[in-house]
Length: 258
Image (cartoon, rainbow, N blue to C red; front, side, top):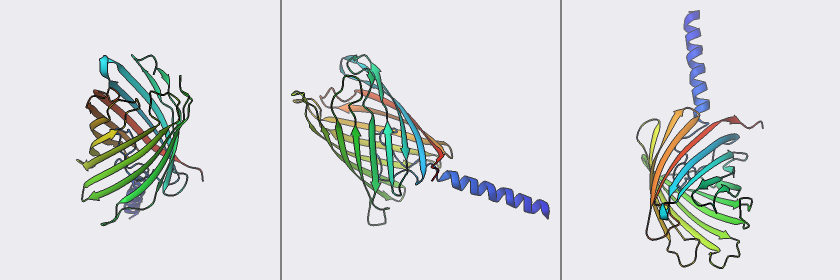
């Protein structure tokens, strides 16, 4: 009898342990550029801290290579919200872009959970501080996000307005981004992703960027996700990579102490 109770206690503890940590990471909770550009409307878990990182490679016109390493921290300090800080590091053939990028800070607020009729809505604000190499302009992004699922199929819509406070007469101050994303679970641990987006080019007289991407997110354990994405640019704009690949990692085992 005691052995039976002991087995029951162990099984109950393991189930409770798994359920607690399963909430700590959601491999279907899509973050920007982990690994695709389009994200969903849901924040990280309340009272949690998520450590993230991505490594990206892009091949641009004239066979220029560009690499980007970007560590991030996201925190669910308030309910239905998340706060983000990221520090990109760029290196490659274009020496003008090589070095530390602008530190980015941002906040996202989710207004509702989707229902059968109503999608989920979120609003985010991001600020890039002129802290990188050879940069001197603030860049503010206001983004609206809509997420709606149909059985296991889910669609995400992102629309952004970007203001770049620079004084270069050859560059635009007002940009926009529109993207649609799709995701579908192909197993318990893996999610297939695809998106397509367009963005106004920074340089005046340059056509819009058009980019298509596909990827996968895989839960390697109950608290960590590994992601992989590839993409290609369409049209004549050199600001979109002809080929790009992104590897992302995120882990969420750090509860906030309050």
